[in-house]
Image 1 (cartoon, rainbow, N blue to C red):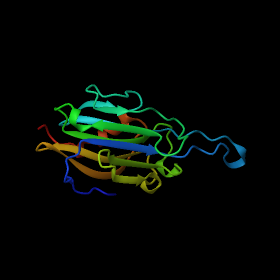
Image 2: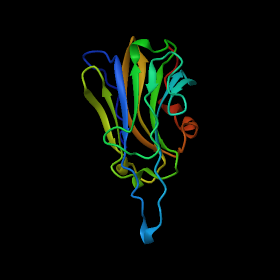
Image 3: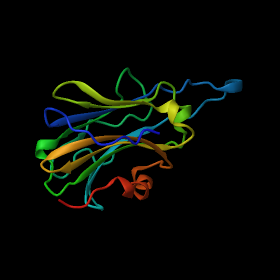
Length: 186
């Protein structure tokens, strides 16, 4: 997968958006049987060193400091564009946070290569610059994926694309896979 080096921008990152989109399941499968909806989940996990400090996802829409907000859960993928969105105001982030990890998981248990037109993107909300876009079908037969990290170092946020498939139907399942992406405290 990607695992690129962190990079900084000429203008420090202040606001980022994670967008997750996919098409709904066609209602009838082979032999007319009804097929189960695909329920993807976008999550931003905030760590202080190796300790999980906070999250924003479909079961906790706003982080404790209010800096990260999940704008609502989609359980089917209905609609055009982003079906789930997380917005993060890095200027309001808890100063203890050293790493933010962006994760996609499939609550319904489908593998990401079964998702039609599935994608995840992260953008600099200030400049409208897309930092990364991942087509989920290209990630293989996994139920989750680590998309990218933001790491706070020397007064600025470094962005690192990851694109690493994991086994995770829920955000809790993803946590054991994230240790290698974390940085120690400030």
